[in-house]
Image (tube, rainbow, N blue to C red; front, side, top):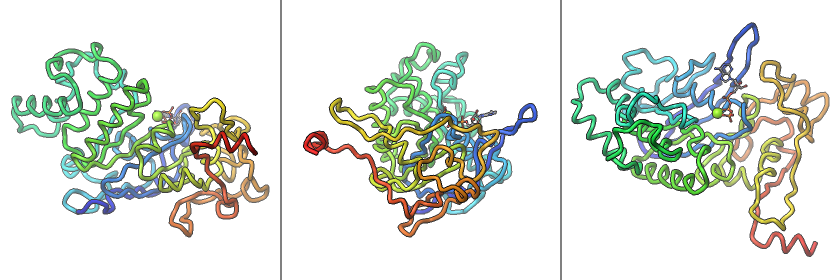
Length: 344
Ligand SMILES: Nc1ncnc2c1ncn2[C@@H]1O[C@H](COP(=O)(O)OP(=O)(O)OP(=O)(O)O)[C@@H](O)[C@H]1O
Ligand SMILES: [Mg+2]
C-alpha cells in the first residue's frame, strides 16, 4: 500500500446514547474518506460529537450503525467495526487514540512506564519484559520525556508532559492511524506548539495518518490537509483545508471561521453572530439541524428537508440545500488588511 491510498472509509456512522428513556443522537450519518499519510481535522462546537465519532472509529464505543472500512497494512479491506476477535487482535494496534483529557485519561496508580507498557503487554504477550522496557524507553525519549522519570506516577508530571505520555502510549504499538482527541487543547500556547511540532515530526518519521479532533480552528488550519466540520452530530462540510478557510461552503463553517480571533486590535472582523442556542441532540430540529440559526434559511425547504452530505462539482462535501448558490467568502486575515479597512 502506497502513501496517498485510501486507508479509512467511514460510511454512515451513527451513535445514539440511551438513558432514562431519552435518546441522544451524538453522531448521525457521518461519512468521509481518509488517505494514508493525511491529517484530517475534525472541528465543531463543544458537544457536536467529535469525541464520540473518534471513539466509534477506534471502537472504544460501538457505533449504533455504519461501517469503518479500513485498508490493513497488508492491503486487505475490512470493516473495522465488524472484525472478529482474532482479526481484531491483529488490527487493533494499527489504529490508536490519544484521549482528550491528559488529567483523567492516565491511571494515577500506575507508573508512567507501566502506563506506556500496558498496550504492549496486551498485544505482544510473547515479548520479554526487558524488550518491552527498552521499547517504552525509546518511545518516551522520542516524545521528549525524561527516561529517568518513568518510574514516577502521572501526578508528578505537568499537563504537557502528560499529553506526551498519552502520545507515547499510542505510539508504542507502532500504529498507522492515530485519532488525536483535543491532543493540545489543555496545554498553554508554547507547549501546544511543541506538541504540534512533535506530532508533525512523528508523522514524517513513521508515516502516520492523523484524525485531529479540535475546537481550535487556528491549530487545525496549521496541521490539517482536510477538515471536517461537525454540527449537532452531523458532518456538514468536508473540504481541503485551504479551500475551507478561503471559501467555506456551509453557513455554519462561515460563522465558525468568522469567530476565529485575530491578533490585531485595530482590525474589525466581520463576525457572524449565531442566533439562539445549540439545539438539544435528544430532540434535534426538523429539516436541516442548523436552519434555526442560519441566516440563509429558506422557509419551506431548510426547515422541512434534511440536506444530505453531497459531493459538489469541485469535489468537496457539503450538506446544505443552498451551498452552490450562496457563494460564501472566507475570513482570512491578511497583512495590510487594517490599512485597507481604514481607507474604505
Ligand atoms: N457516554 C455518554 N452518554 C450519554 N451521552 C453522551 C455520552 N458521551 C457523549 N454524550 C453526548 O453526546 C454528545 C456529543 O458529545 P461529545 O463528547 O462527542 O462532544 P464533543 O464534540 O467531543 O465535545 P467537546 O468539544 O466538549 O469535547 C453530547 O450531547 C454529549 O452530552
Ligand atoms: Mg470531545
